[in-house]
Length: 150
Image (cartoon, rainbow, N blue to C red; front, side, top):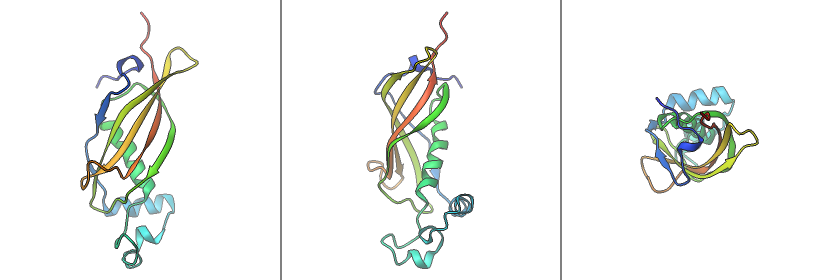
């Protein structure tokens, strides 16, 4: 698959990922991997007494899966994922929910090295239940290669 370089995208360009269903196994495995055994995620009887009435997926699990969904969109000539800006959790994701992400290039920034530059994407995570209201959102900063000059 061809990679998109700094010069190939313009502010306003948008992409949408494929979907991914959050499973019981995802939640259990993430709890073990992260050591986050909060009862909201692993104890159904406890979770029944909460505002959600059932267990919810870890917010960072959803963010982690979102990073994988990134690779179902047109590929970038990525040098490094530089971080998150203003990342917010605004809704719950439940076992069985299918999520997808959207990205919109909102800013291009120069880098001190002439062979690379920064993309700042507005990223939204949606569930299949509401494609208008994101459950997570914020900006991702990606360092990408520039095309080699001839």
